[in-house]
Length: 69
Image (tube, rainbow, N blue to C red; front, side, top):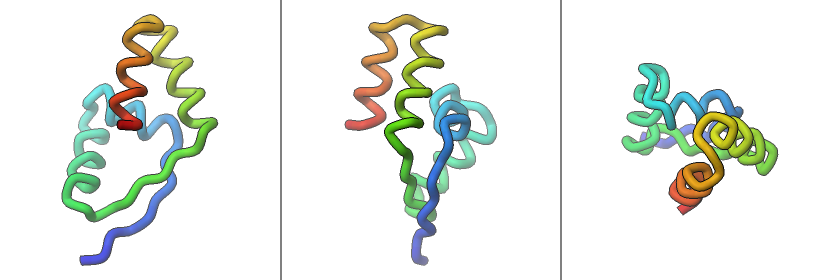
């Protein structure tokens, strides 16, 4: 089955990272190659801000590094 290309906003990526029910469903679709995901530089900046505000700079860099890795 061909995957669908989707552009995610920051909220969707955050839901995946925190492991919400919606995030888990989305992650399963990604892992099964049902969808291909694209995010913008602006989304990464927003995500860094949200994570850093909540968890600090060190953890933020680790999470973003894994996300981009």
